[in-house]
Picture (cartoon, rainbow, N blue to C red):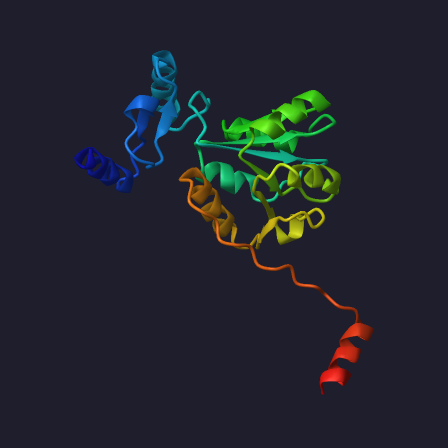
Length: 216
């Protein structure tokens, strides 16, 4: 009831780690939630936390599943997002083998799952199961994959510097990743996201001069 939820909120404010089963969860307070009956998973998590001071394995039910397809090791703000949202699974897929930078991230953050040399069938499976697509890989374009994601009617979030093509992405400044974080938290609590701003159309110099002359 409300008394239980108020008590849990007080623990959350003290930055305590909250664990629950699906059937015992009160509200959305950042709990680590386990499938009903998976007592051994909760026990392993408690032991893991006691031994390491933080979680090194991911056994709980994810509150959200995000997918990123990449053609490089450079994924903008992945470490920040994974650290801030430990209950969210960040799946990273690639057609090829992956480099040490990504393996280091997956070792540091148990909620980062890597899928190197992925097959088309497995990628299609991840696409269907994901809750949101993060268009946050850098350097090498993956606009063809992002275009596929646009047909799934699922949110696509990107940073301005990582955007691959114009595929209805919600755009954020990489200098303020907390804004993307806030929208991911809204997806967790099933709140409506604000309507994205219209894409700014950048005109060429000739078009701009013509506009100035016409409206002067």
